[in-house]
Structures are given as C-alpha cells and as structure tokens.
Image 1 (cartoon, each protein chain N blue to C red):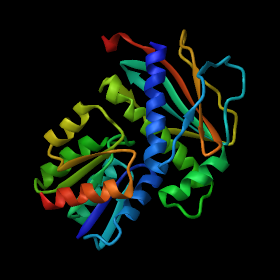
Image 2 (image 1 turned 180 degrees about the vertical axis):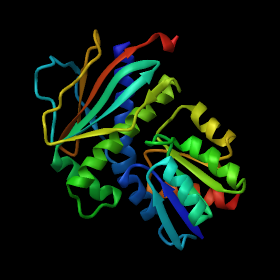
Image 3 (image 1 turned 60 degrees about the vertical axis):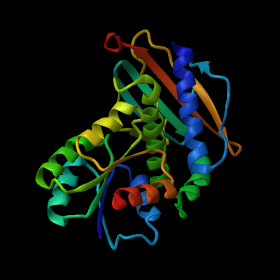
Length: 119
Length: 154
C-alpha cells in the first residue's frame, strides 16, 4: 500500500513515517503544503493520506475537499493540533476517514491508521 | 481573562511534554514581561493569532533542552535544523490545542522561527505579554502569551 504524509513540519513528517514500523505501507511519499498534497495525490495515487490542517498555500481541509472531489474513495486521516470539537467534526463531515490530535505518539499514529484501514 | 488564558496554555504545554516525553513539565509562576528584558533562548517560534483573539504565542528553548527532547521523538542525531523545526511544532501544537477551550474562532498561523538572535516581542497596542517559565528534566524554556480578546469573540 502507498501512503502520502502531508505536513509542513519536517519533525511531524518524520515522526509519522517512523511510527509506521512494520505496517501495511510499502511506499511512503511526503508533501509540505495543501497544493503539493493535491498534486502528489494525482500523480502518486496513494491508498492513504495523512493530512495536517494548518499549512501554507492551502489548508488541509481544502485539500481534503479537492482530493475527495477527484477520488471519493480516498482514505484520509487528518492529523492536527486544532483541538476544538468543531474542527474534528468538520473534517469528518468533509469526508475524512479519521481525526488524530497532536501531539502524537508512534502508538497513536499506528492505532489511528489501523482504525481507518479496518473500517 | 489573563488568568484563564494562562491556565489554558499551562495545560497545553504540560500535555505536550507528558505525551511526547512521558515526563512531567513543571511550570513556574507566570510574570509580566517588562518589554525590554532578554527572554529568548537559542531557538524560538512565534504564531500569529487572529479571530476571537489577536496577538502572538511564542515558545523559546535552549539548544540543550531541544537536544534532550529530540531523541524521545525518534530523532537520534539532533542538529540545529531539527531544533528549529521542533520549537515550531511545539508552538503550533500548544496553540492549536488551546482551541479545545477557546473554540474554533481562535485562529492560528503557521509558525515563524527565529534562531540565535534576540527575540523582539511585538505586542498589539494595549496588549500585555505574560511569560510562563517551563522546566522539564532540569531544562528551562518559556511560553510567551500576548493576546487580546476581540469583538469577534462575542
């Protein structure tokens, strides 16, 4: 399976990638903005996307909209520090498969990805 | 208002260290910045706040503290680039987590990182800046909170 990690923070991209361990993903790519995420999604066709919200150029929720318009079956896990309930609800309403709150741990990322893949 | 806001950021930073390091961060007594003292450590990040509040949130930490924290998140070869990234991520996380209590109207920017130079604190007119000392594993750092509630919050 292919995974696309979208986050403007290098620390977060590396932390998410490390947390995968021996998981389902054989190929991992990264993007640092919403615009780049949409472009990478088109070219790379990942099975799963982890998506930050607060990013330069285009926020993650807008990127979720565009990606799901192009491929309604895309599986997207939103990973964000925005802790208000409304943001999580909005992400799910827009079609994200899950919402993971930062700060993350290897275990929380692993569990969140397992959850969306078994749903 | 200041007391509530400071409590929220105290909870956010405590949660960050508890989650990431499994250790406890100890908070010192917050104090008002005089505006002319040196408050910056080696790496700092600032996030702009708009919407229900306006102002800035800062997090500043010395290199040694960041070098101690980075291996706990899996970075085995800490360097200055990762230190800069880490202060940005901490500032982003504690600011975003504050929305749990402050709501979705508390809009945060992406972090701006300042490395190795004095931190100039730009506060909005009539906005005070509070400094919250944070101690973790005998390393010091600071959260700076300079916020004013706006009419958009009502």
